[in-house]
Image 1 (cartoon, one colour):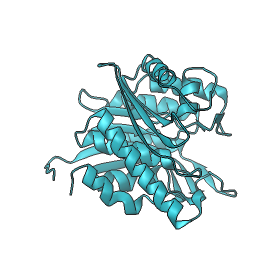
Image 2 (tube, one colour):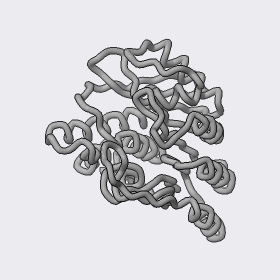
Image 3 (spheres, one colour):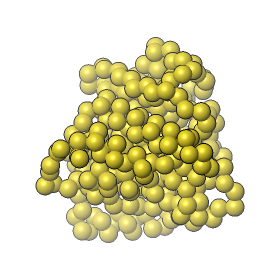
Image 4 (cartoon, helix red, strand yellow):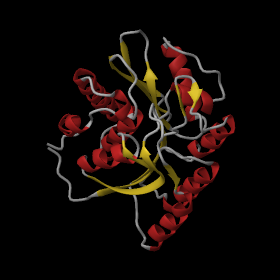
Amino acid sequence: MKESTYLKRVAAIHDISGFGKCSLTVALPILSAAGIETSAMPTALLSTHTGGISGFTYLDTTSEMRPFMNHWKSLDIQFDAIYSGFLGSFEQLDIVKDFIDEFRNEGNIVLVDPVMADNGELYKIFTPEFAVGMRDLCRKADIIVPNITEASLLLDRPYRPGVYTQSYIEDMVEGLSRLGPKQIVLTGVYFDDETLGAATYDASTGQVGYTLVPKIPGYYHGTGDVFASALLSGLLNGFSLDKSAGIAVRFTAESINRTYMAGTDIRFGVNFEQSIPSLLKELELV
């Protein structure tokens, strides 16, 4: 069991849904359980998340983001990581870029999850121009965590459905690193119809790693946020990029499997809560 008297702190810049497990309602409990203080900057307030659910309310909180940033700066708050997810506009992209400039220091991690697309398509609220803006934000990151669709958009390449080859994946992660971030974690990677997982790439070493687990039937909302939050938990607890990705893959897969076995409504997110003990064991916190 690891013991530390230093409490690390993350600035999590995501939307928040009152119901449905994604974004801040995922990031806050996972990071907190991993022993990390998490400060939240909401980019939007929704009654539910948007995946497969209609009639949700949506309140844009762009007008509050700079006041949040300025107040935190006035308090001289320092962050060990800056973690951005769903951003709803070009203005929010610019605010997050300014936030990184204001709060970046020599020791912290900037992790950008470029949430904007999946299954070969941009989310309906975004235009192709938004992908260009997200590319500029990713240039400021140390680590980015795209899925295959988002990676294709960032690279301005046509989306190609799997099954993939290692050469295809490795060309993609190396291309992403040339945008600016030196560490890449690519999700949705599979080389056959039986397994699914993630690839990692560290430009400083040229090392590519893979973690693949048995594929579980169905499409589950919010799993990207579960994965990225667990990944950051690993990194801030001293694990390497490759080991952190492995921890995140297994935690996400266990959470999906719990949901699949229970037969609950997959629109509402995965049961990550009851998988947290497994995460803490892998993080050597219990």
